[in-house]
Length: 220
Image (spheres, one colour):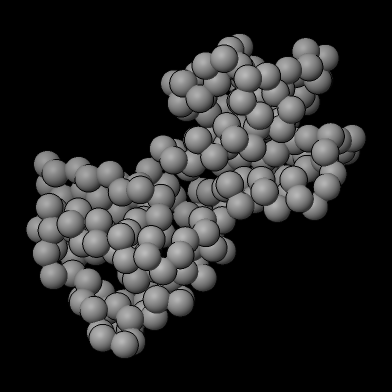
């Protein structure tokens, strides 16, 4: 049974959402401490988060931004705000979906099912030579060695891996990062590539990423 964490400060809405989720076959949890929201979310390890924007201490958008620095748990923003600015900001910070109140319960359940399905399809273990890659956990594993990649490093590595038979331009990588809600500029891309190379070296793939001057990168 998949666990869904409700991050909402209205007790009536929490009770309604909990009943809806329970009847749909999910295990609902309700955040108990907004003061330590990030720590409680990470310790509960839910399969998905329903996150309201208007919560105490740290608003939902900033909480999401902090979460995305360390985890990739699917997040649906559930809010009474219906401005395009809030939706764009939420998606740019890494939300997987956005739904405004009042919403139809069936629509919310369909959104939850769709996000979980997309997440599961992306979570399979991928291999590169003798390295196992866990994209959703940001982990590279080789025998007894395990390395943690940042979200940007994993996005870059997976894009190179998916296009292993050709040169990938810098513009392509930056576009893919933006499509994954992670804006990155040219200098930041260089830094991320350098760090990714360092981690691949640690796990025994020192020359995995080749620079093709004026063209881009090639994963050997």
